[in-house]
Every structure is written in C-alpha cells, then in structure tokens.
Image (cartoon, rainbow, N blue to C red; front, side):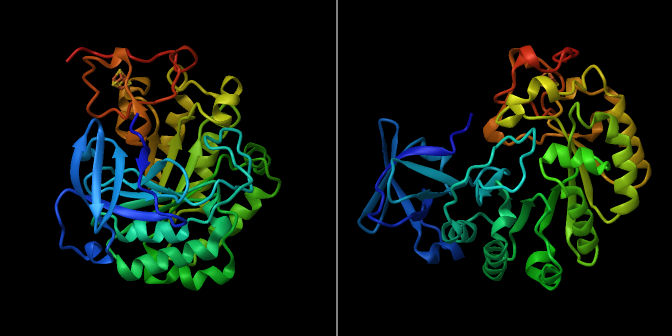
Length: 367
Ligand code: SF4
C-alpha cells in the first residue's frame, strides 16, 4: 500500500505548513508562491528538504516525492501527502462529518471537523498541470459555502485543474444555480449516489428518510445547470434486484447524467461490518448487472463497472470494467501471477479478503 502519511520532522511552531517538494528549482507559477522545498540529501531512509534556513525531513525515498505537495500540521509527527505528483488518484478529505449513514460506507462519519480549506487551497494551486482533484468526505457539501469558494478561487488561479466531487446530493439549493452555471463550477463532475429507484430502499440504504425525494429535487435543479453528473450505485444484496429498474429510472428521469458507475462493495468501515449481509457476489450471479448495462447502453447512458476484478466479469461485459481502485489502496493476489488480463485489470482493494469475497475469481488463461 502506498503511504499517504509519512513520518516527518520540521513542523513549524503554531502553523500548518504546506510545501511542494522538488529535486531541482522550478520556474513555474507555483514556485512563486514560495512553497518549494528543495532536496538536500537522503540519509538512512530520510529525505532532507530545505527552503531558506528551514529544513523538513521525511521518512521516504525522495524519488517517490518529487513534485508532491505535503502538509505538516503544527503538532504531530507526520506529514500528509495532499497531492502526489505521479498519481491520478488525488483527493482532499474535506470533512469526516456526514448527514447520512450508508450501510456500506467505507469511511464512517465522525463528529469532529477540522477546517483545512486554507491548506487545501494552497495544495490545489501547487498541484501539477491539468490535475484532477477529488473532493471527498464524509459529506463535503456540509461545508458548501467554503467548498464553492475554494473551487472558485482555485479556478481563478489554476483554470487547468478539474474537480470531481463525491456528494450525497442532499445540499444543493435553488440559490446555487447561478454559481453552478459559472465558468469556475461548470466543469466540476458531481458524483452522486442513487441506490434504487424505490424511495424506501434508497432511504434505508443511506439511513435517512426523505433522502430519495431530496435527490429527485437535486437532479431537477441540476438539470437547469451545465453540471456534469456521474451517478454512482454500489451493488449489494439490498438493491441488486432493483438494478434494472434503476437503469430505467436513470435513463428516463436523469437523461442528462454523463455516466453511471456501478460499483462493487469495499470491505472496510461499515462495508466490512455489513459484508456478510450485503456483499453480492457478481462472479456467480451477474445477470442483474448485465440487464442494467444493456438498458443503460441501449439508451445512451455510459455505464461503467468500478471495483470489479476482470476475471469476475463475463468476457462480453469486461469492456465496461475500469481500473477504478485508487493506486494507494490497490493490490493483486498470488493468483494474479501470469494473468493475461492483469494489465487491464483494476485489481482488488488492499483490504479484500479472499475467504469472504468472490467465489469465482482468479481463473484466467495463461498468456
Ligand atoms: S486474476 Fe488478478 S489480475 Fe487477473 S483478472 Fe483476476 S484479479 Fe485481475
């Protein structure tokens, strides 16, 4: 697993430090912010970086960190890798608070919130050219005003960046329409989960009565904006029988959605707690997904499969599967050795458990 936190020394007294790590001096726009720390040396597994007279020390190989943006809180002994320059999977955790309690949540909500918007603003401005930055939580739209301000300010400085926001879709309001139409926000991709077209089933899955009705209002509102929408659906025992119905619903009522991501569960957080009841083994029963894909494809909605190892998907449907698992939490098992599909396969979550997962996995032809 790729470490997102590194043992660190050199925190500033009473101040959060956001810095970009460079091996050589750079003359790009970001360097003018005065946030570049240049590599001095590597000794015994520690990389030393300096700016003026201040030195920060990180337990990592410097070649893995070139161009990364890190944050060192004033107290503590670790640095957060906010942006990894060589990764396509950078995301900023806006908050761990949430107003839903989804039964498969991989990151169960916490009551405490720390406002990191100032650090995130700097991190975005220091990000590599054309980076796509994920915004996650918790529910990031609980801090909607700050989030909109962040994306608007970043756009003014770095119009090359794109945001992909994961939100439960419960917090859009009519007064947001004008801002959503602005240049700054019109390129944002909003990833919004819908688990069933049956309101009761959706509400039970997200642990909130009225959530589905609010989603319908949200989609109606977003239809008056240029907002790009990705609908997300985790397939589980609770909703697998509803998947074809959901395909009908989405293509009828949300024809402006740009993509539909059908996702396998992640065995962590509440997903792990409810795994026995909710994991739906698509390696042995794919027909619900197949029907949903056919309906979506036939009606022009681009559907994709997330977190489906290729060998668990019938070959006719493998073209829908994308390597969706973030690099830092992705693994391959011993049975992947010699697999002819490995280069296209997204692998497995780091916390995937062979004993309780897909029954039909790892059968592949030798190359
Ligand atoms: S054997 Fe491993 S690499 Fe091959 S398709 Fe399955 S999970 Fe992917």
